[in-house]
Image (cartoon, rainbow, N blue to C red; front, side, top):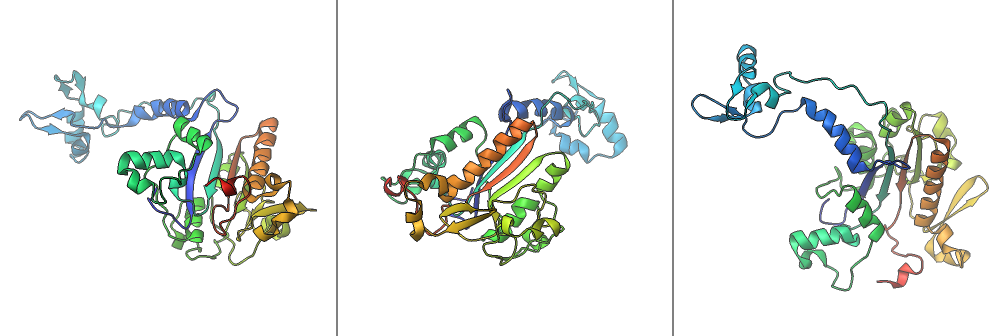
Length: 332
């Protein structure tokens, strides 16, 4: 992650094996065991008659006849044939069938907007260790956030420390994140741009594999539409702008409301100066809480039905206006 606030930050991407005895790390280890059947070992594994050390990469550049001869050579020092160290280069790969008993992982992606990494204690601690407290505590020693739940995800899974956005503004970076393409290839290379309708997103790929998919929160890929709630724009599905997401009711295009409320079949956003409408019930309607509740509901329903799922929770906070609900408004 860049060591500064980004206009759009996607700070966590999790593969969670929900309701399964396997965690992400165990799942990775199991699949890696299969993939290692067809990889080259790193380092200098080839010892030439003149004593020089060579790597599998050096071997790859030899002519085919020379390479085949070398692959079959016995290395006395390592007590192995070169082909066993350079499996990929020497075409010494054994195909291992996919394990039908290995469950498909479910995908939970959480995006936040304009969040500085120092507001996550796991990253703040990382910065202290790598750069010192002066770089980590730029707002002073009293402005230290505690995020134990997010920290647990990093501790039990993976934490990215070198993850950069391809564009410094919202729409282009989101287009790349959804499609895996550079912004200028998506039609949405400027803020408030409209992503081309024929773009294939990762959600479409998963949907084609039988996953139930949902997007909740800020989208910002439908041009100048404001707010652009999917529940209010039914033609999004009919004209192909669902982009592989089965459920889009709680997806809106752009804007930064602090409270949401369902009114009939629609969702309505409210600004922070209207917070008195939600006195005594802030937690049910504050934007982050509202979207997480709906996302949790989607996950629970998917688990009950036994369906694999992929869900994107795109939280519009902590983007300005910098107003939050109690009790967080007085904590720092």
